[in-house]
Structure formats: structure tokens, C-alpha cells
Image (cartoon, rainbow, N blue to C red; front, side):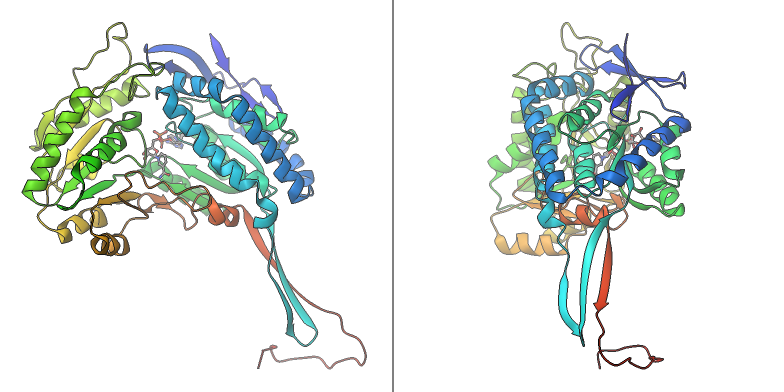
Length: 498
Ligand code: NAD
């Protein structure tokens, strides 16, 4: 059986733990490879390689570092088809969606190509008599990233693209469920000209994560995954003095006002709710129509769309979504559907019985639709992370604003309306980090920043954009004067600008 090894110091490294994780083909349900799970000693080996590499890498001028990023971009574009196939084969998302996954990461690499400009500091001439002040952004040293299964291309690139461009070295601990694309990315980074050790990949589970969190030579940790683990990573990482950003789960709402273009809004919501089998932190699993007439019309249109929605294997170009990542995840989604029924929500479409001929052991689950979902229900409060759309009916704009604002998660939200004033008020007041106005998946482009609020993110600094540059650098401010002539007296009073 194929074995997926660590990638340390520019080469494949076999682990010694004797522990492995199964990597499935979600289309067939078969184990297609096993991934080594690292020990703390293997994490330490990666850190030592990264420490050595970083000393020289930080001295490479920003323009040369940018050239590595330009070349990395070219190589990914060269290998896009193969990367997307590999990604789909382990994750289960359809090929076109895997290309989107890689492309969104690539856009962060394009942003990182501008690093010479982004790293420019500030300068004040004559801040005092003969005194000039300037600031510079310096790399932290070794940074680490711990990533989820659902974007094995994009999320690692969110992190290491900026970390490496700013002069750090990086240790990536990808999801053990679909670990192959991250290794390929590291190989391509070496081919692009990054020195060995600048990007290491260590596979693993909690043992590797804890070793990263506790390692004294890792200065910053970026995490993306579920909220309980995000909170754990944030608490443990900051306790050992690290800079930590930890993005968590989500439950994004799509509010539909009565004046919205319902045909368009429903098309948008269907794609955002069921695309990638709902396994996106910016999926739109809750639709909030305002008023009975809107809700009834939305429900009817959703039902119409579901009739033609095609679920298929990840390589089927006609499929709109593929299998979920694992049997355990499929079971979890099925359990949530049963919980919704038991809680009293109306199960309008049940995807649990779905089976694909020839792929009966695959992790497929059909689209499900609930109506009459209430805020008191656990299935509303918790993240299902599957192809399940819930209709939560409300009577007023105020109620529609209140629902996402008071939810424990605050990643993304969307409003569908033709009323600019209502949209503006909603965007201004809603207690959520990323807002779409007639945009169902408001993931900001690479040169803006990505981050939710409440239990969707722990820490203060977002992913990518200028916030990403700030996360991976520390500011140094230099105050300089060049005295000449008579010696000045000692100053015992704090100097001021008075
Ligand atoms: P997960 O929390 O199970 O795993 C994320 C990472 O944490 C993996 O690398 C995993 O190996 C590690 N991990 C798992 N259990 C651990 C433990 N007990 N201790 C230490 N580390 C552990 O998440 P997942 O299932 O891979 O991904 C789906 C989740 O990620 C969803 O909740 C989704 O909303 C969230 N997500 C959030 C964002 C965002 O930006 N907010 C983006 C993508 C995904």
C-alpha cells in the first residue's frame, strides 16, 4: 500500500512512530494509502531543519524571495490538473472544485509575489531635532500551520505563502485525511528555488499538534479547523508565548428579504449550501426568508432545484458534488438529520437513503432539506458540515438580523435584497466577520483578509492580505540621531515632543 511520508529538509523522511492514519478514496470507500503519524522527535527534527534554513532565508532580499513565489505559481499552474485529481481522490470534491481550491490558494501566492512592496517600512524624517525614525518588519523565525481536511490546497497556501515570502521558514501539519497535496506543494516549493528546510511537512494527529504547540523554537502557529480544537490550539499555543491565530467552525446564514430576486438567490444558495457536499466553512447551510410568502416561494424553488441536482463520483464532470470525506463524517451528518427530525423540524428532503450504483461503499449522501427550523434546536446551533440546508423562517428584518448576530459562530453571512439601504444597515450591524450582499460565499480575495468572529476565530489577526503580513512579521522601530558639536547634558526627564 502507498505510504505517505513526511517531507523534511527537502526530502521524503520515513516516520518511526509505527502509527499510521488511513487515507480513503471517498468514491469507493477503500483505503488507498496510509499516512505516517509523527512523533514529537520528528516534529523537532523538522524544527531544527527549519531553524537552520531560516537564518539564510531571512537574508535573501525580498525581490529574490518574490521570484521564488513567481516560479512556484508557474509550477502550480503547470501541474494544476494532476494536483486537482490528487486532491479530489482523497477529499472527494469534484475536480472543478478542487481546481478552485488550488486556485484560491494560488491567489495568495500571487499576493505574496508583491512582498517587496508589502514589507516596506515607515519613515519619519525630523521626528525631533536631528532625529529620524524608521520601522521595519522582520520575520518571526519558524512558524507552523495546522490545517483542516476541507481545503488541502488553499489553506496551506494561505499560510506558508505569506510566511515564507516574509522570510520565515514553515512547518505544515496538514489534515491526516487528505495529506498528499500538501506534500506536492512542498516539493514544488523546492523546485521553485526555496532552500531545503524552508517548507517542511510533518503528518500527524494530536501528538504532532501538541509537539508543535509546545516547541520553544516555533514562534507562531496558524490553525484552521473545528472550534473546540481551535480554542485548544489557541489556549495552549499562547500559553507557551506563541503568536496564534485559530480559525474555527461556522454556521453561515443567507437572509432573503421579500424584494430579493428569488430565482437568483435560490440558485446562489443551492450552490453555496450543497457545493463540496457542504464541507466548507463558508457554506450557506441556513436560509432565513423574511415573511411567509418569501419562505414558501424559496422552499418551492429549492425543491425544484434539488430535482436536478446531480451527486456523483469526484471525477464525473456532470456531478455537482461528490462524496463526503469519510464514513465517520457521513454517519455524523446522518445522525444530525435524525436529530433534526427528533427535535421537530420538518424534513422535506432526506438524503440519507442515497446510493450511487457501482459505488455503494462510497461516502455519498444526498441533499437534505429541513423547514421549520428553530433557534432552540441543536441542529441549528451546531455545525453539520454536510449537504443539509435548513430553512429558519422569520417575520421581520430585525429577527433576520438577530439570528446570525446571536449565533455562537460568526464566520460569514449573506443578505439577498434589491434594497441598498437595508443591505447597508444589515452589513453594518450584523455581528459576523464576513458579509455578502447578493454574494452567497463572501470569501474575501487574497489581498483582503479572511476571518470570522465569535467562536469562528480565536486570536486577533486574520488570514492573508495585510493582516497575514502582520501575523508573520514583527515590527522594529529605530529612533536615530547623529550628534555633533558640543556634548549635551544628561536628560533625566523623559523626552517629549513638547
Ligand atoms: P478538525 O478540527 O478535526 O482538524 C483540524 C486539524 O486539527 C487537523 O490538522 C487535525 O489533525 C487536527 N486535530 C484534530 N483533532 C485534534 C486534537 N484533538 N488535538 C489537536 N489537533 C487535532 O477539522 P476538520 O474536520 O479537518 O475540518 C473541518 C472544520 O474546519 C469545520 O469545523 C470547518 O468549519 C472548519 N474550517 C474553518 C475554516 C475557517 O477559516 N474558519 C476554514 C476551513 C475549515
